[in-house]
Length: 114
Image (tube, rainbow, N blue to C red):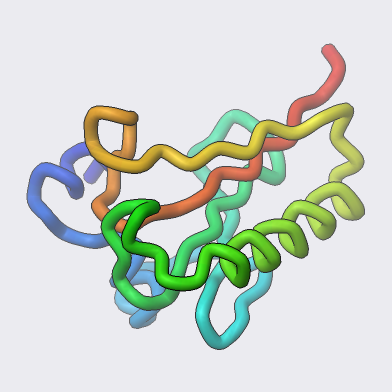
């Protein structure tokens, strides 16, 4: 089942991963957040970072400072492991913005020289 099909079915893949109902490759986690590898990405080391509590959109995050501190720690880990030339860090908030799963996440995408 594709990510877009899961969105249309209102099934939260990230909550299923947190509840260990769906497999995932965990990079690191804290009490509030988790970072996993996006294994379907064409970018080696592509990470998804999201709250463990179900949060639909960016505006619903209660402590953005803690969220970004966790994102920063994952970003540094990706830099250390994969040594990319640069990274793309993005958050799609809402279906119209390209959010496929109704649970906010941050993408950390390593970019490599070609």
